[in-house]
Image: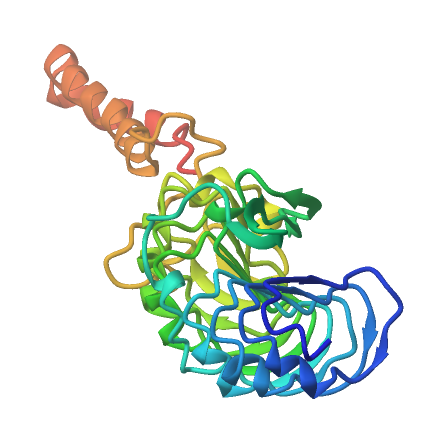
Length: 333
């Protein structure tokens, strides 16, 4: 297979392949789609995937037994728009050298990914075009994409053993539509500039050990249709934004120190943070204008007004007796 120098598409998914990837495949330098998903391959991710296959647009290693760290050579895949390394045993940190040019560009994608191949029959040459397709997991559902594959820009590193912080450089990939880092051992905070990813429709950071506050910039991603930050160590108030409050409590569950809508737990001033407004629980008082102070002033205003009227109607002589009888009946609770 290493002598198929002109091959562009290689799908070997959903088989029972074991062992390592043969290094001779690095000679297939024109590969644009390489799908090895759902096998039982067991080795470290070869460096030559990034160093020798510069034209890769789609790389799928999902559902194998790959181990070791993500080689920095994968950062050389400047044309990649779908990188799926999920459900392996990959450890180490997420590389900071995410120089993935296509993912760093907004839009400018055709709906399809098209390739062609040529053949000569006798003296006549023929060229055939074909559309690429790939099987991807989107919002928990496995589907095949073909007619819209070109619009999918995705990084999926979920269900591995990755550690360390989410690199801030990932926020430079402004063309990302889907980012899944769930089910790892990531720590640190969500990058403050996460709001730069304005194209995001899917964000899953659940089941890690991420701490700190949810960045306010996240509330400015208007297109996000799926969000899961559950089962982390997040704290403080959930930023106010149309999208963030539209998700159910399950999107934020498993963070005991998190507060604010849509969670039932309200925030105190310290949790709300500087510049944040504390929402008082008004389950008992439907009208926010009717406060405890209103009831206190009402309770005091009635007897004071009554005393004034009584003073002018009965005169000074009888006022002491009247007041004494009335005070004995006032309930200050």
